[in-house]
Structure formats: C-alpha cells, structure tokens
Image 1 (spheres, rainbow, N blue to C red):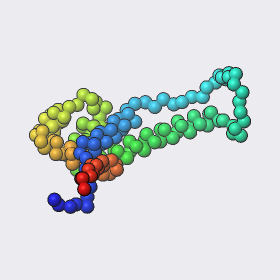
Image 2 (image 1 turned 135 degrees about the horizontal axis):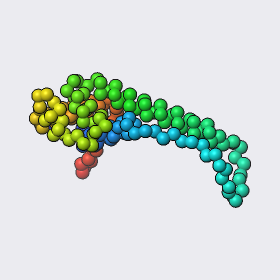
Image 3 (image 1 turned 180 degrees about the horizontal axis):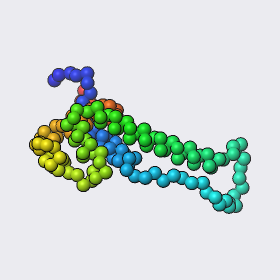
Image 4 (image 1 turned 90 degrees about the horizontal axis):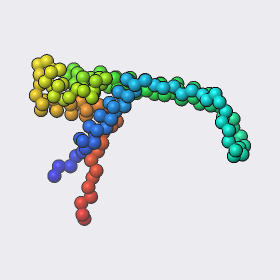
Length: 154
C-alpha cells in the first residue's frame, strides 16, 4: 500500500457540496430579496418590562439587515462567477450551461453533452469534464470533503 501525504477525497460529498453552492448561487442571483420593514404599530404586552440598559432601535437593525444581506448575496455571486471564469473553456461552458442558468431544473446532463456542446461529446467525457470542474471549484471555494479514515483494529 502506497502512503500519500494528500488526503483522499470523498467525491460524492464534494460534488454535493459544490452543487449546494450552485443552488445557493441561483437563489441569490435569481430570486428577489424582500426587504424587511419596520412595524408602525405598537405592540401591547401585560408582562412588565425589565430594564436592560439598552434602547432597542428597530429601524437601524432592519436597515443594517437589508444592506448587509444584499451585499453578502452580491459578494457570494461574484465570488462564484470569478472562480468559474478561471476554468478552462469547456469546463466553464459546462458549468455555466448546467448549473448557473435560471433554467437549471429543466436542463439535463444528456441535453448538455448531446445538444449544447458542438460537436457533441460522450457521456463519459462529460462525466470526466464535470468532475474536473467540480474538483477545481471545490478547491477554490474550500468545499473539499475528505474521506473519513477508518481505524483498523490493532
């Protein structure tokens, strides 16, 4: 058995992590952001209030949430787009076509490798390209999942 200083990668878990990142990307990119609004009516409570020494500022908290959430969504999308732009041409095309479009749910792997690529590529070539792209993306986005080391009985 050959010893390696590199950890063994759990391909399925790493692929799932990258696909989850693309799911989050599509949510941030294509779904609208609902801003929070301050309540304009007072609430009544029969429990006595205790003094905490702070004054709650609902409007400031809402404004901070609205701005920070939009900035975080934008930054995440830009980070994904920057990493994908660094991929080789075919891997970049595959990822953009299959995982970064608004129609992701309706685009199958078969459609991508048989209709989108010109000339069409085989299923095996597509699988290899996709894994290479996922591996590079997982490295750049720090999404690599290592296999658990099984302790052998001593």
